[in-house]
Image 1 (cartoon, rainbow, N blue to C red):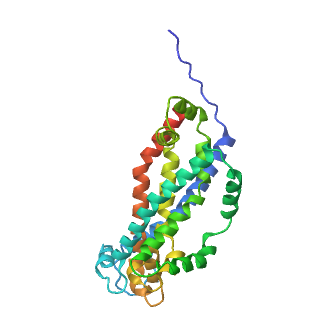
Image 2 (tube, helix red, strand yellow):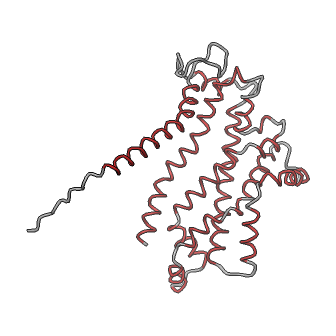
Image 3 (tube, rainbow, N blue to C red):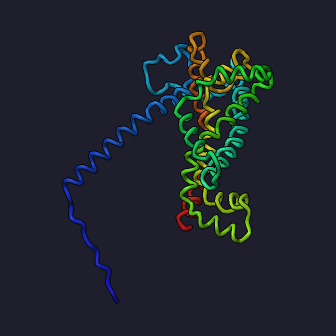
Length: 295
């Protein structure tokens, strides 16, 4: 019966010192990064009685409670946060669904299919991606205004169309992932009688869960966190404001002292949907990675 021989690693002082320095450095960076997040969370639970907003002489609140969260959803006479939250949620969900379909379809087409002007489109998309999207904001607004989509309930439709319409240009990340999937799988499926659409839905997509999760997250975060275009399109129509506009208004001079702690509460609430989506989809990300390795 063979015995397992344990090899004792020789202590290396130089490596120990190097690893210790690196770990201490990373720990300090983590504390610096988490410090503002912790401060905002603590401020969101601070029961404000002094009326000084963020100007306090202490880090840890003297009194904690859910007063700011309650007032954020009950006092809606000036800034209606529940309505802003629902507006943003509706826009983000529809944009996420449409954008995910657009991005994955375009990425698969560019990765697997060959047609005329394919390289021209790839180069054009790369060049267009170098310019920030807000450069076309004035032209986009004028087009939407001409179509009558800048007033009333159609404001939400306009934002969904713009956010989802421009998502197809951001396909390079998904295309790079599709390029790593062996084309022999597609060829085998085609030989077995599958159509190209069946190859896309039943062969490529099950192996592409990581990039699907990434696309869903980025598609949802885009409209959820956008401020510039939402502000331009909504203008003074407060009933269609998104959470980014509402949080920005809470920091204006006339609202700062009264709404600062509620701003912190709103900032915490805004992060919950994104964190929830990531946690729910993390399992699919891990399964997709393990499936890709086995394949």
